[in-house]
Each structure stands twice: as C-alpha cells, then as structure tokens.
Amino acid sequence: MIQRGIASFGLDSGHCPPWLFERMVKLGREMMYVLVAEYGPDEFIKRIADPAWFQSLGTVLAFDWNASGLTTILTAALKEAIRGHEADFGIVIAGGKGKTSRKTPDEIMAWGERLALPVAQTNKLVYNSKMSAKVDSALVQDGFQLYHHAFFFSRGGAWAVVQQGMNADRGTARRYHWYSENVNDLVSEPHSGISSPVTLKTVLDLSAAKSDKTREISTELTHAGYATLMKDITLLRKYSSRLSQMAKIQIGGDGRPSQQLTLLNLETREFKYHPVVHEDFAKSKYLEKILAKVTDERPGSYEKLLATEGVGAKTMRALALVGEVIYGASPSYEDPARYSFAHGGKDATPYPVDRKTYDETIMMLGKAVRKTRLPLADKQKALDRLSNTRTARGDML
Image (cartoon, rainbow, N blue to C red; front, top):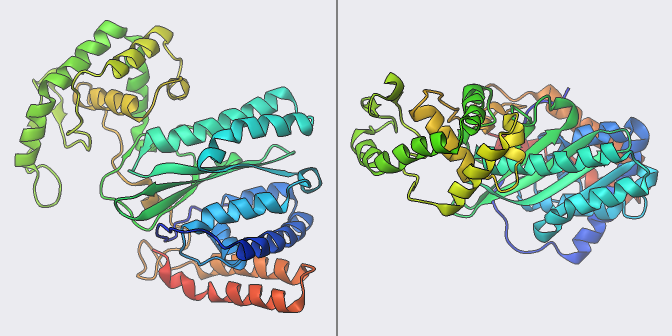
C-alpha cells in the first residue's frame, strides 16, 4: 500500500551536466529493465507515485537527496531511457518541464493510438492528466506555481502523476504525487503524497475532505443563476475593504482573530478569518464572464465545474468565499502536506521515522542495482549513493 510521504528539498538553479544526464539515462534504463521484469509495469507506476521511493530512485541515479532538480531531471532521464522501447516496457512517460508539460495531452493521444488503446481509455488518461494539474493549481492554493508535469501510464491502465510547483519568494519547490488506484474522487483527497520543505500555516485547500460542504455550496451557487450569484459577489466587493481593515485590527499574535467578525448578519453566520480576506473583489470582467458561463452551463458536479474551460484559482476562491461568508460553509485552511508524512521526522513529529518502510525501499532498489548489467564499478557507486540515503533520513521533516 502506498503511504503518504513528505521530503525536504529547495529550489535549484542551473542545468544538469550532459555527462551526468547520460549516465542517469543509462542507469535509469537498466534499473527500469530490472524493476519492470521483477515487479511488472503496473507496480513500477505505483512506486513512482510514492514520494520517498521516487526520491530514493533519483538518489540512486546520482542526484542529491534534497535537490528540487531531482524531479525534473529524473523524469527526463527515465523518459529518455525508454524512448523507442515504450512498448517493450509497457510504460509510457509523457510531459515534462515548462513547455513540454503543455504537450502532455498530445503525447498521450499519440501513444494511445500507437499502442492501440481503446479511444475511451486514451481520452480518460488525457482527462486525468489535465484534471490533476487543475486540482493542484486551482484547488490546492498553496502559493506554489506548477512548472513541471509528468504523466506515467501502463497498458494495463495504471497511471501516476508527478508534478512540481515553485515558490520563488520562498526559494522552495513542492512536488505532488497521484496514483490511479488511490484516486476515488479527483477533487477530494486525490494525492498519494505531497513532498515539501515546509508546511504552511494557512493554505486554502478545496480538495480536502473538510471542504466537502464548500464544494457542495459552490456547485449549488452555479445553479442559482447569474443574477443571484452576482448579488453575493457584489456584497463581497462592497465589504471586502471593510473586512480587510477590520481583520488587520482584530487578528492577534497567533494569526487568528481576537474576536469574531459579523458580516451584516447574513444568514446569521459569523465570518471567521479567511486567507483570501484581502482578495481584490473590484470589478473583474473576466471573473464575471466565467461566472456567467458556469451559471449558464450549470455543471452537474464540482469536478465538472473545475473542468470547465476558463475556470481557475480565482473563480474557485470567489465561490469558496461566498460559500463561507454568506452560507457558512468553511473550507479547509490546513496545508495538505501536514497529512503527507510516510516515515515521520527526526524530531518525532508527527511521529518517529518509520525505519522499516524506509529500509524496504532501499533494499528493493539495492536489489535492482545488483541485477543490472552495469560494470561492477558503476554498480558500487550506485549502491554507495543508496547507502548514503540512510543518513538522509535526518533531512526528512
């Protein structure tokens, strides 16, 4: 069973030297041959979706344990390693960094045709790829902007997403993992893990189970009609500056209001601190256009609402704020990464490191290294790097 993991890494700059990338491709190809032969393509996809396993594999292929570049270079090296042999491996890797990430749907479609996959299956893979990116950019509003998206899938239907966002101000990166068998609902608790160097005090997480009521209200708001919804938005615009001023006065040293604020006694609901209280709700023609579109289309579910073209983070924030202030549906403000510890931390927070699970990962990869067809010297170097990851447990949060 995949466990939810969190590892620490900062934002890197620079490029991977060509000689290092070539070696990573060579070792990556050998590792994949062994792992797929030993466990099958579906199991390899499952492992990729495990944050600690993915991080360990990157370390074996010569990257620093805590380097953000591990994500982009490892996925690029694996993609290059199986290029031209995807059918033999039974695995396809689509997407990548920057502009390449935007080509992911086209790559999936091309491979679906090449592998003679049913059209419905290929279309579903494309949809899952697009939705995972939308969820982590529009529902998990943590300040990390996505710049890397890799989609792994097998002939058998297993798929995984490894995507990464950056926060330039903090100089840190955050990686999001998805795995097909773990996803019961694309918009509710979909992640198999989120790797991050920090957990933030306040994150508007509309994908959390605690945000169920917000998702329900947001969908209902689009069914109420444009005029009704705009009345609510107008109220927020009219009082947003007042709320902002009051919040500045009321918020105490712990980051919470020293007393509760009441907004016009609407629905007799009390307004509690909201992370987007400083949102500028001055007239936005684009927001109005999108709200007009969704109230006209009346999506049948929150997932369909999110999937609507043009709907993004600001639209979902606006609906969430209306839902809380006026209708009392409070979303989750807790960073989802705090629920993503697989192996614990060096200070036993939230619990001690799970050495058994961690060591099983190392043993599995060590076994694979020994079975590769590499020269003994190269094998030993890879094993040494893997052995050094044992000390890296002290870097885990």
